[in-house]
Length: 281
Image 1 (cartoon, rainbow, N blue to C red):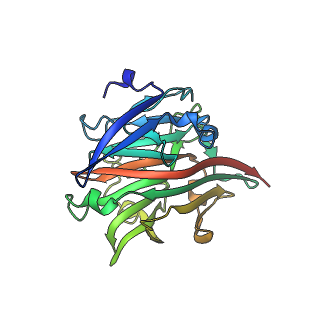
Image 2 (tube, one colour; image 1 turned 90 degrees about the vertical axis):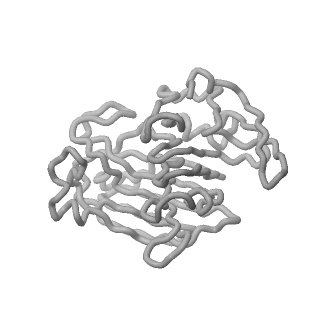
Image 3 (tube, rainbow, N blue to C red; image 1 turned 135 degrees about the vertical axis):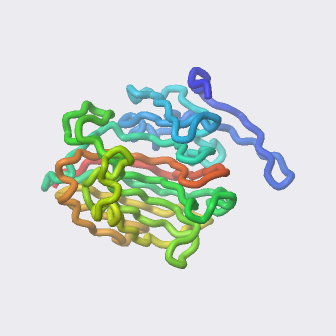
């Protein structure tokens, strides 16, 4: 993908669906006031779907999203939803919140709030093997031990998010549910770490059911991190209340969009709202 081509105001595209042609008017998300606050705190990470699996480029690293619109990141003018989509295994289209924050502060709480709806996710993953039937929408990642500059990762970074909100086609007998995939220790279990065979890495994750996907309406998520705790509220109900004191030496940041963990398909998710805020108590 030629990133020089993505700075425009809008892109009009015709999409063929079930034999009918639908025009999609793609507008730069920064043109919409409801998305301006989070974009002012973010940069865009986007893959080239024709590139190597897992590739990514960064756009609007200074949070200037003026005219930034492409087929993987736009607002659908007809419905005013912020749209992320992507093709290819381990590829992504996500905004990365620039703040690297301390999860252990006792009186400071960081919120990522979203109303999101995946579009035909089962269709997206149908040609992938069953062990790869997931896509990620929201993340709490880590930027290392706190020495990094805003928007980057530094010393002590480990290649694992603290938490991912994912869609999975099937897990534990449940179909088409959201799940919280939580790293339950701060051990680096990356391929080059030398730790992969340890007990800590074999038991590094817990997976908590967040409820079924509603195919007709957005689901409301509020992720709250602070005082060495992580809460995940779904449609106003607390689904996760997790002690993360083991993560206190790692600074963290939020991501939102779509990250593919399936093969041979294209993801799409619509955000009706996406907000980041810091709450002091």
